[in-house]
Length: 248
Image 1: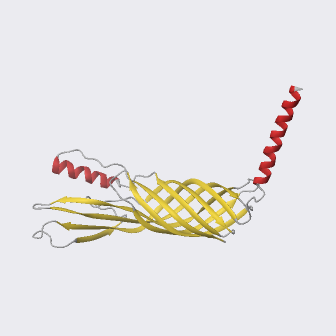
Image 2: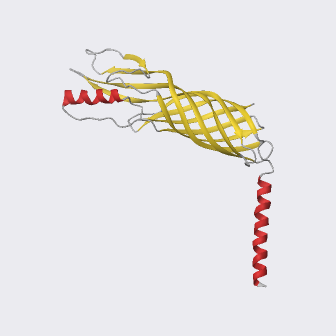
Image 3: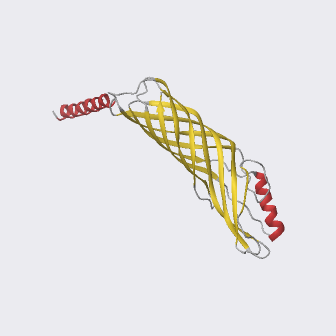
């Protein structure tokens, strides 16, 4: 009798799990390919150094492929244009005075994410999803802007501002960033009425953005002027985004 009741309990548990799974996929996403246009805002920074965050914009086109018989699993890719960068404070020492100011970095990329994700539909109108995977990007433009304020009126009476291209190979002290970047991205989103999307995401860069030539110039400058072996830390992109999307 005890053995029979135990088997009955396991059978009842199994039926309950199957029933719950059937209910969970009453609104299973439709299989196949869909397109989504996106537009949003970034808050990005350069990690592992004394850089602050900077706001930017992004836009692009995504392709989502809902896998057949996968109960909500999908893969997604696309092409985005996105602004990344950051800002930092600078201090320079002159013959008679010290100068302080800021440098703002604005880097524009074409970016290709390749993510795998899972979607769950609560009903016919509302669905949520999450995805994760790598991204690959190439810098296509942007500028760095330096604004230096003089402390002494006799030395410099007004702000000295200048700009230089984001990915050009300059010598020290102008930062030289390499053009290629890659990393990992994570997204969570919600969709209403099979069209309107709100997406929140983070990208963690894995590439050291400093050019080797800039590192060498930095080291040589401090070695020649101060006699010390100075080195730069690795600097990687980080990006937080809030995006609106429309699925076609």
